[in-house]
Length: 263
Image 1 (cartoon, rainbow, N blue to C red):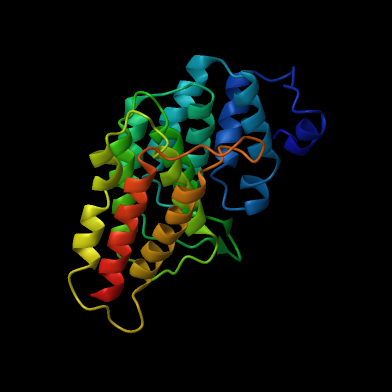
Image 2: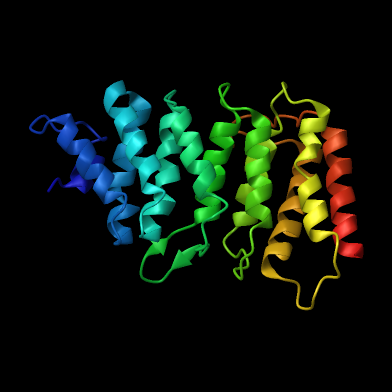
């Protein structure tokens, strides 16, 4: 077993006494480990650093991506919810397969365990981790942006009893905003993904208390409205990017919110 803390402490230098294939397989297993100190500790940092530095050859990165896409169907929630983080690392590094998008699209709105943090398993964060990958795919030139906008709507409409309590609404709103910076979006596509939400939540009287999934949706859309007004920063060091068709997006969000709240 590799001492990943020592590797991390050595500026993530690649150990010379182990084949890269063995190291990547060990890291992959670690990022599905039920122990949060393993899954979310040094192995995560080392893998992210190696991918960003190009230390892992392309063929092995693509194999790793295939493994993560398969992991979306893993019976363990911690394995499923860390898979999008690894895929996001790979996409950010320039790796891409259409099958990864397909697997993510099947998993994201269907995931039912939406806990942000568990006392035993640590961070799970399906919605937030998935949002990061949604933004990565949504900015990729080989992925139609409207596909990721529709996927975000499907996640927002999926029934759940879990109320977002770990800034999931913020992460999802920012992911949607990142997709909406795509300049190849038509105005219709920039707002059309809101129509199913209005139709789904704007038809019947809201029960009291407000169902969790409607509350989550309202909070996410309100945050997105603010981002549409201010723009979204890819990173804290970069200037804010404006959302394409900003005024139409703001008007669309306001219309949906008004329809839901007043129904």
